[in-house]
Length: 373
Image (cartoon, rainbow, N blue to C red; front, side, top):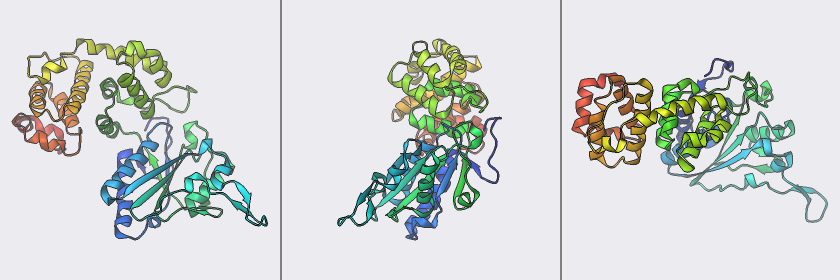
């Protein structure tokens, strides 16, 4: 959490990864026992823009699907773009034109069968017009709006920015707040990096942020910059580099439009270190390769090796060659490298531990992992 942030009083602060773990455990327990989803209160996620609240819900859906064997459908509603009628439905006359009835909104069209779990994600609830908030809160608390009711297999999660984030946000009434389960999402570089490795975030982004972890979020709520660094905007930078061009110089203007000019200048300057790195192909082919001496180059090398290893994870002989090379790095950097390797996929560390090359490193320097194996 950056220095300018003000913590919500009395609300637990957790990373995206920890929140997914805690909520998944709770929901899977009630689903697998047959108690019913309503045993867990509706959840309200608080946090600054771009910290990963939407990603959190997608990860939660994957975890529930994996641990219950049920298909999980996510309905993502951006309330800032909604009018009250979008939630309440359109009024029309009944068959004999004596009463008004409300056509069911699309968000209530959910599969209610036992082999399905639905997640209704009400995003930007604190920034929505107050007339929309009133309807959204009724869904969050009572799981109904007017005559429309959510199915029993539906999880309701809301999310919004804090009033201290200098985004559009209205303070939540205490009577309403007392009926929700609140979690403040905090920034954690370690948790973000694990996600980034598995997501395939561009190695230049992960390398730079490993070198300058404080640049993961650069929004103190004081300066009115429109473009600033957040986990979301760094993911968009990665998408540009992965899908348009890996040339940071060429993509500079677009990158600056995502993370701001100041951060983009530092990112562009730092990325020049890649020109001096040894061939990653040579390292994985077991050929002789030099070891950089500068800290910035070592961070770039570790990130590039992790990215290459992730893309060639089943070429175990070549992975073993890279482990031999990694053992030549300064101990702190070899530790970071192999720790990152273990995050390539779940249980990938078991494959690593079958390699004599990795076992040799563990015996000589594995203490640096502090019990992470």
